[in-house]
Length: 73
Image 1 (cartoon, one colour):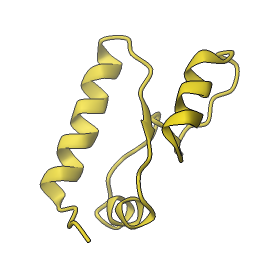
Image 2 (cartoon, helix red, strand yellow; image 1 turned 60 degrees about the vertical axis):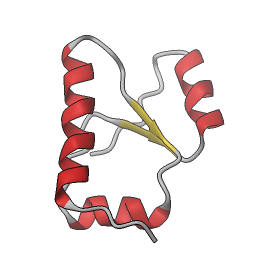
Image 3 (spheres, helix red, strand yellow; image 1 turned 45 degrees about the vertical axis):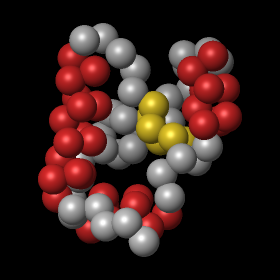
Image 4 (cartoon, one colour; image 1 turned 135 degrees about the horizontal axis):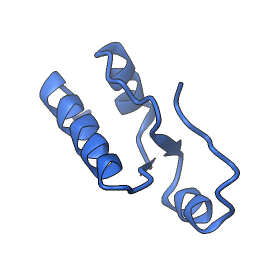
């Protein structure tokens, strides 16, 4: 198992925030359960970031209507 440390979690969330500041809708896909657990345990703030289980579901979300927010809270 690859370790997810605070530096990686911070880089991921900072990158997502930077993209949002530029007007992008951020959709994270394919995060393995152990990585998701590590992000939560490290206290990574995913508020406002859409998460989907697979790339296929992320693409479907991105191409679908914008009225379906599935956002981490």
